[in-house]
Length: 271
Ligand SMILES: C[S@@+](CC[C@H](N)C(=O)[O-])C[C@H]1O[C@@H](n2cnc3c(N)ncnc32)[C@H](O)[C@@H]1O
Image 1: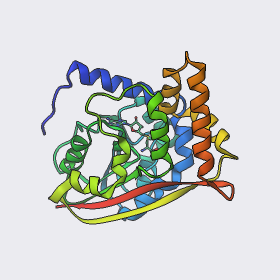
Image 2: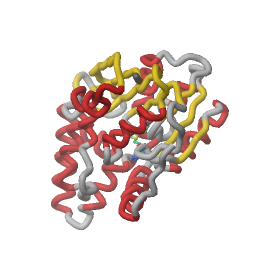
Image 3: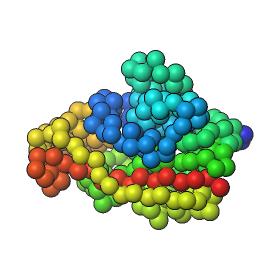
Image 4: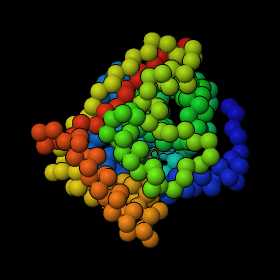
């Protein structure tokens, strides 16, 4: 196994990201999208006894159903606070909860039968490093399962709306929603994977009455939105602009009293 020491600059970026995801109450947001974890586990046909690594696992959206399916699961994330929530909610499932950077996984080559990431690795700045690490830790013939928000779906568009108000991303960071494009995923993994199974579909969200209710929830609970508002907190005009822009965007995604959030699911077999 090769490990690289983070530079002080990288370490500062990781600390900033950890703080971002610890802000608010991400597990409350994850509760909106629990179907995604179950769908990914079903698509991977996880069998009893298989070794599963959930990367950028948060509070265990995939790790939990993977363990219930009989997998021996290691849940990793940059943000220990989220892993602690997962462990306190699901301590009985035998999951190993471990802090780790998706760009530098602390595991041996070929260590796992399956690696998963649900709207997780898409938030690490270096996409190629994440893809390289996923391939490295999965044995030949093993599977990689990913769910990522698409650039053209609601969450992809939300990041576009927040961008002009957000703190600048680290230099060289690629936009997360690129992971929602099949071409991008193909180019990251190249010929190291085969048997690509891509599905673009949506998850139904019916917890909000309208765009303003959605905005207020994300403003209170979702780290990236909280950090964006903090960045403009001393400018009431910009805060009001962003309030309107998020509510209007969310309203556009309401049909028959619910929203549909689009994502790409990718299941790949390691060569
Ligand atoms: C939107 S949450 C998804 C969490 C979980 N997979 C789920 O479906 O609820 C994104 C997660 O990525 C994690 N994350 C961001 N950058 C990371 C990195 N470089 N390495 C590992 N985890 C990272 C965050 O801490 C956060 O838990």
